Length: 293
Image 1 (cartoon, rainbow, N blue to C red):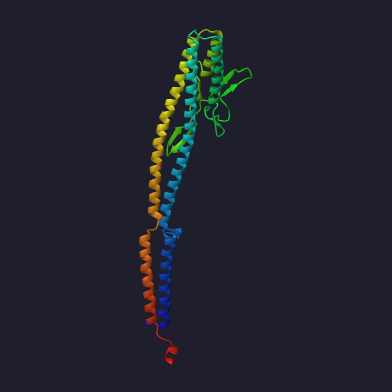
Image 2: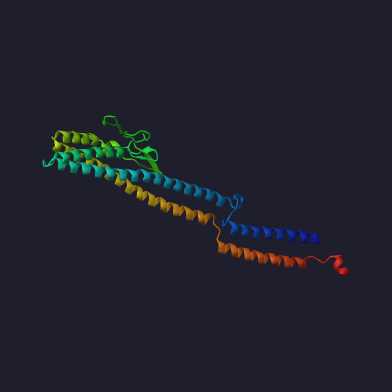
């Protein structure tokens, strides 16, 4: 086959174009830090990247869900802690009032403090976080405890669970059942009302102490059950953190460019490009003008 000058020129231009394309590819990898800039560069890497990125997004969503659960649990635990302190103080007042050595003024002071603690317990049961009543199940728009003009308390605790998915196939209860914490027979508000009535009459204070003890135990039991769920949530959070690290590392291994390798390839390609230019300038024959000089 006869090789013409035109063929040599065209082949050289094509090879130089390919060389430029390779150098541009390595430069883009250095600029972006990624092995590919479009799916057509490597469809396998692109498809794997979609899967790894989806996994990372899923883990991040679960982490946001655990933050929401933590918000519910932390506020519930704080409220139950305050409720326990209030009930313990009421019991101290009941024991003090039952010793039979109090003056009328002291009994009146105990009565006033008991009424204040009753209002405090009502506020705790109606704890509202971000516009949600956390002790009323899924009925978060309605306060579970209402007080009329005469100070009479009505409780309507919803026993539905607020369940949030915190990992694949794992859902956890975020709320505390207000009926279990503040309810009972009698509920803590009735127990406090009975104590106030007994204070005014000076009778049956022993019964009030027993009712207050029952209320304290109810709150403590609810808080213990909440603590167990908080411990489980912490384990789930640790697992999600590990999954995030693995997903991020896997995605990086799949997509991120190896800078040392890319720089080496770029330098090698530049050397080859210069060699091709030098060889091409010698292979192409001089023109007629060169002979006429």
